View 1: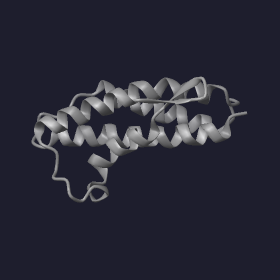
View 2 (view 1 turned 45 degrees about the vertical axis):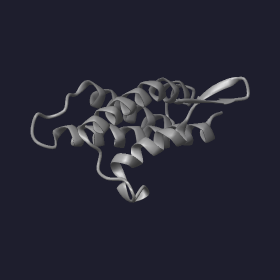
View 3 (view 1 turned 135 degrees about the vertical axis):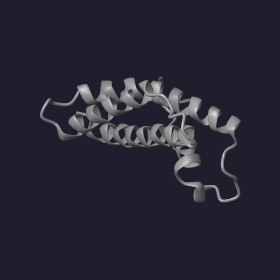
Length: 123
């Protein structure tokens, strides 16, 4: 889940985005069918793991910026939303598990964006 860059490990954003695409962009992999229940459970677990791995990285990078920084504010807002989504449970209604996984995927996608932006905004 992490790529080695020099002597440090960085989150593997490419792999995270591939997981996101499985749920949010089925046209990205047109030959695949919608996920089965078992695949959905695996994807949901992957998304949760990716979020748990990326959240501290984004928070650490955001907190290095000045308190008046817009990228800092946006990243911290995304972190709050991601935490809420991780704490939530899927709805028992039909399709609730898919909707929950998609919410996690959108949160991960936003954090990937923030991670990349913060990397370029670092002091």
